[in-house]
Length: 408
Ligand code: NAD
Image (tube, rainbow, N blue to C red; front, top):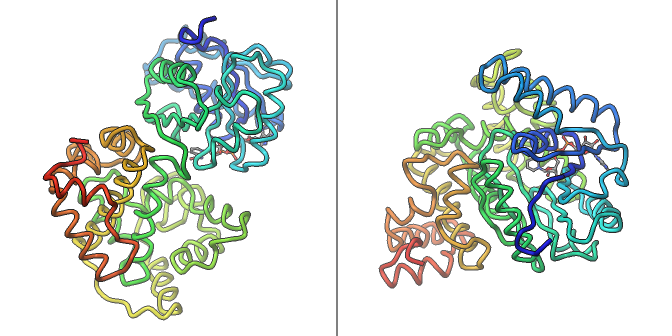
């Protein structure tokens, strides 16, 4: 097979949890045969049932007919072990977010798979090069970062490692197209494009809780701007406990003031929608986020205990800080070459993070404001709040030339 005509026909997915289930459906729906491995046989059994139920539901909704559901299901099969998947063209790994575990799996698969096969990880943030280094085929290793639920969300971040070959990227892009995804190539950095930008955005939201705002106010301001969900509603959907557990596992970050509200919520078993309570309350069986005065009281207590003098924080300040945090990080991502263009960053935010479509994405929004204006506003924040607001070099350069991100 030539390097450029590599087409994925047989794939395997490792991990039958939340992400594995969605990824398997993406592949089967696109006509790819998938073998499925999980070291917990019960998990795999359950996952196969869930996929069958999802297809049955799609038939009842009239989205596909029975014959199509049967054809999709017939493409999915359980595999007993790695030896059973030795002939596949692509493996997508979706096990726990743990570098050593992923490296171990990649090392083992590398020894078994045919040399031209691609090895992909669905990691949300881990170093693709460190994963590739566990193999003797780093040119065929890449990230395929799906968003939850993977069979519904349009975005696919394709993460290019330092040694990922153009042919491997091309094959991944072609697969993304077959799956009906909006694919964006990202360089390898912590969190890639989307989650790296999310970090300072959420940090501002969390800081404002300590300074005087409440979750509902922050969410209302961002939803007023047009976001599908504010950051705290989003955390309730994703699960507040994921980062909490990751911090515990890593043994760091747990003492930062900004995460104290999250910590308290998790200690109370308030993990978000899945546990009926998080930043909001959910009635049994409902996804409707309801204001919970208990959470406001908790926010107040935590910020007072930390010694904050609370003040009123209006929607303008909430928007200014959250949006400019996104734009400034986006500019750094662009100047570092992690994203190929401002448009790619906008695609990530429009298709994966609920940024309002009519505003075109964070970078397009910044261009509409004018980068000279954005630059001034960042400098003003830097004066008031410190170094973290230092404008990305690229913003100053483009502003000085009267250009926008799109001109780059
Ligand atoms: P999960 O906990 O729901 O599922 C993980 C699965 O991996 C489990 O079924 C487990 O039995 C299996 N597993 C663990 N070790 C294994 C091994 N050695 N061999 C085979 N199977 C093994 O996790 P998830 O939420 O689906 O996340 C999977 C990956 O996707 C993580 O890297 C995560 O960071 C990433 N991710 C998650 C989301 C999300 O919203 N959940 C979004 C994007 C990316």
